[in-house]
Amino acid sequence: MKESILTNRKNGMSMLLLWTGAYAGALVLMVLGIALNDFGVTILAVPVRVVSILWLLVGWIPFLGLKVLKPQEALVLTLFGKYVGSLKEEGFYYVHPFCAAVNPAAKTKLGQSGDVDGGHSGANSARNGAQGTEQVSKKLSLKVMTLSNARQKINDCLGNPVEIGVAVTWRVVDTAQAVFNVDNYKEYLSLQCDSAVRDIVRIYPYDVAPGIDTTGDGQADEGSLRGSSDTVASRIRDRIQQKVEDAGIEVLEARITYLAYAPEIAAAMLQRQQASAIIDARKMIVDGAVGMVEMALERLSQNHTVELDEERKAAMVSNLLVVLCGNKDAQPVVNSGSLY
Image (cartoon, rainbow, N blue to C red):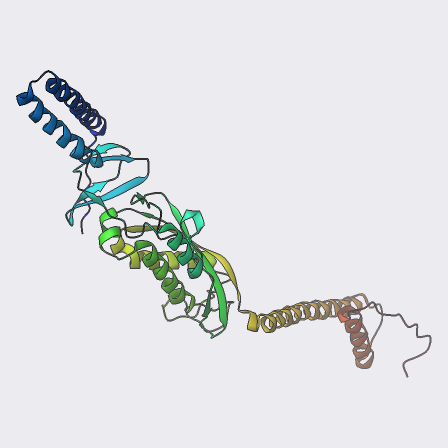
């Protein structure tokens, strides 16, 4: 379905004045008919009164063609089931009185930014039911809106369950495609967001892991959900845009709003991260201590401060490593005798 924009219908004010004048004329004819009847001119009184009564009965119908649009609003119009065009610019319009506005997503409320429910279908259904007795506007919003679906639990490429939430900013760019190509463009976008997030998250590990190819080039890389969040969000945005292209929707941006291990493995993964950090810290301490011991032995040998045999060197290395690598301050022990 190709969008057709109606730009030559901004004559709402002139048509309003015309039909208002016609209605006022009908009232004048009604009064004139009564006056002619009182003066005995029945021949003229009857047709005048009939015409005025008929116009008073059906004269309100042309007023149905008056449409008012505010900035960033649109109307998709059909006439007896046929698409006739869309109104997208703000202004006062006049169209065929029997044109009907179509918006299958008018009652759909998704919660954030006035349009996204966050996945609570029960609350959404209750809200829709409450609105069933109210008049719902058929106008489409062309504003930039934010979709924030509920957090999803997805397994990453290593099989670890991860919870992730994504916020997507979007807008309608083709009103005809949004209304006619899909059943409900808001629900369609929400479903495609869930699908795209699952497709992309399954490619990445939560944290950097060896031997994982996240780019599809056949070579291992350091991509991860935690360390490459901008890249992951960009790929999610591109995947969503690919899926909603035919629905007349433009996805402007996707951002990760929440990322964590699932509760059932969060404690174990925290212990793993703590153990990895402790090991890395110990490696750094040991590397530094060994370097300091080597420097001390080299300086003592260069300056001929003291001559040490292999056994004394081993004892000195042992003592220095204990002092440098220990978690607590070492207690000095003064040896006044000989080692032998």
